[in-house]
Image (cartoon, rainbow over all chains, first blue to last red; front, side, top):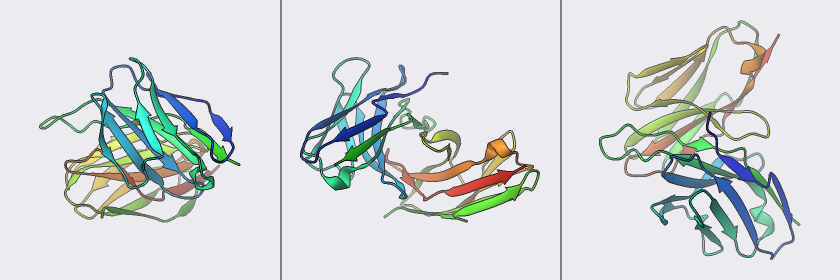
Length: 118
Length: 110
């Protein structure tokens, strides 16, 4: 069964450094997402991406964050200058398009990258 | 603001002991309600989508139902392999973001 793949599984970074988290979505999916889960808290939406642009973002997704689809298979999340509070599990997800009048398509998640900021 | 509240926070069952998990929600027009299963150290695994009140979906020992204010995940004769955290999420009309609840941590003892 196709799955979303995330690398690395664990990333340790010094505060203030840039970090890039990588994801390979399911191949025929057109919508891509990033979520995060701080230890012991809810899964929180960060951003959705469609047709090479951000379609929706949350208040968490400020100027420190950016997303990119650098080629036909990868989807990345960059944090420009990491803070201690960025420590969390970051999940990538993807879904089929599903438009107006079409059934809503579920989002399928990868197993996450645990980001630890020192 | 969309909100999802799940109860109980934790549930311990004996193998074969059926029960239900609750998900109460408020959303500005429901596009879909989703149930996921999450094992430790893993990402959420999709189980069901429900779109409108009265709808029901089943998969093996799990059955999800939906009303205008809440959803239930019924677990019939659970097995130890059903032990996991079950997450409920809502999606509002016109949006792609999922709003998650805190989850119910289910433990099924043999």
